[in-house]
Image (cartoon, rainbow, N blue to C red):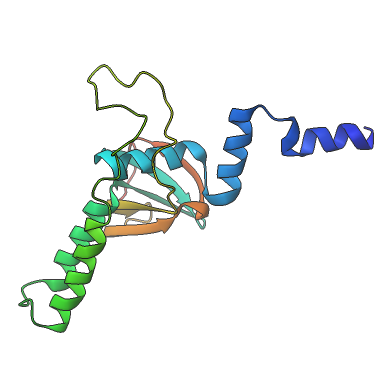
Length: 169
């Protein structure tokens, strides 16, 4: 293989625009298809069962929006404590974080949630994401996690759906 041919096959400059975007997403923060699923979850509240491979562990759960995650975290942290306690103050912080996800879908080229689907598949107007959020996360080892947050860049593999058969706890 010549030096020029090798450069063409290993660099991004020879890729089609869509493939170049996928390569940039994969380098910058995870699989572009999973990134899109997380963006839609954050923007529209779409919840999807997923199975992830992260740091040698298999994790299954329901992908939820950041808003749902932080609202649940606030409830878990506060418990039955009144608002004017340390737990209440921490819960208020997480509730403010949940509110940051309000309006994520505004201005998206995805459409107005037409039941027949959008006219195209562009997600360019949705904000970039770095984290995904799961509810009822389960490690294949059988341990359950009520809420889970992970960096998209750390996900090695994933699939939509739930674990079939076997024991997950």
